[in-house]
Length: 289
Length: 249
Image 1 (spheres, rainbow over the protein chains, first blue to last red):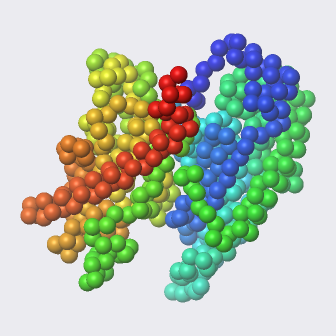
Image 2 (cartoon, one colour; image 1 turned 90 degrees about the vertical axis):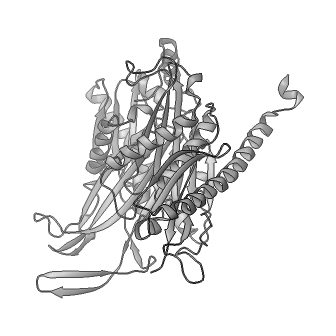
Image 3 (cartoon, rainbow over the protein chains, first blue to last red; image 1 turned 120 degrees about the vertical axis):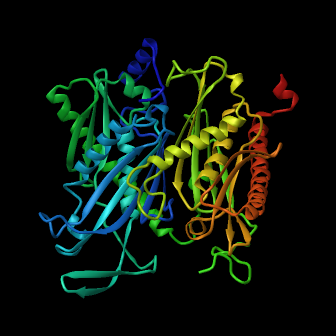
């Protein structure tokens, strides 16, 4: 995935560090690297967030459009996830190089959010029109642990999203014409605080670590990604990479992931609340910081 | 709606010869060898440079005596007000080629034989003049990467309002509802033109004033970016004691 390559001695060093519960950057096995989050980065989107997890840099934008619901689910809205692995992140993503990773990420994000996200909130007129959310993820730099970073950024962007209010409707026979408010502040926020975040746990040697760096991902034998809601419920699990797990270890990893997920959700929710309460004359930094 | 009001103001309140606000930052990312973020008005771009490194693509076709320049122009799906389905399409393939040609005129490729320089630009938000901002951002990123160049490559756009007044640094609105738009990339010290493109037919009598205005815009951007770059390196150099006896030891 990236340009990093390690020799045997470096791998042994990392593995021994994990065994001692003291990783190369001084973290313990359960610790995360510093996270930075900024909201409202892209002005022409309905919601956006930029997240930096150490060197991983993710920009997520949510746009809404009016669409017709599917015939089998007339009372539900739609949500579509799209991940673009920019070549800026690593030259390996150039052209179609990042497509496999992008497909895996968007599919799993869809799977993780599916059981929790209430699509009926996006309904406008049952069977006629609904909101369609486009969650566009752009990976600008990858410093390991993309799944966690993408899910955190996606949740933050969805929490930042607000749907325009509908001020009037015109009925013309079977067709219903909707009139959307022109005022950019006449919106209602999308409730998304109960969405799950993903927690990746990478198996290195006999133990497993949270928030693996690229180097640790190379040393690791397989990785389990657990999707955890704020209450600690697990909505999806994915095993990625080569390597195999014993059923007992798997159980232990999922339990531990669920525990970390609760803490991660709590930290994110606190940050989001803090961000919303300081909305007045907030300093925008974007990429200029 | 007129592009230029009777008072001489454009739709966003600028006068015909005024450019949009320029803000930039060099070295936004750690992993690439050079990177830069540049915004001109609401057009926002990040550029990343990898290299010079060994040739990875098309090793057989690579020249023996100079570097291969590899570009990719990509536009985020959310960058425009209407969502795009794909980040890279035919239009971006064309812009990739133009970008490569413009940057190749300035990079001293003969200093890096048997190696490759990757230039990746990503449009985060688009509001007219995407190509120009990408060229300027790529120049900044190349400087950040420390790659030898003849001089800067600076690009700017201009258009014609009411069939007589040239407008510099046009926005998306002016691009779509205005007259012919012209994009030019120049090497500002020697004044050579590295790339020139017009969007539609333009009367030969109008070409000269429109081109002059675009070149004037380029020079303005050059002066601005040069100042920012000098300040950036003063800050870096200040921290490392560049130019002092301490550093020389």
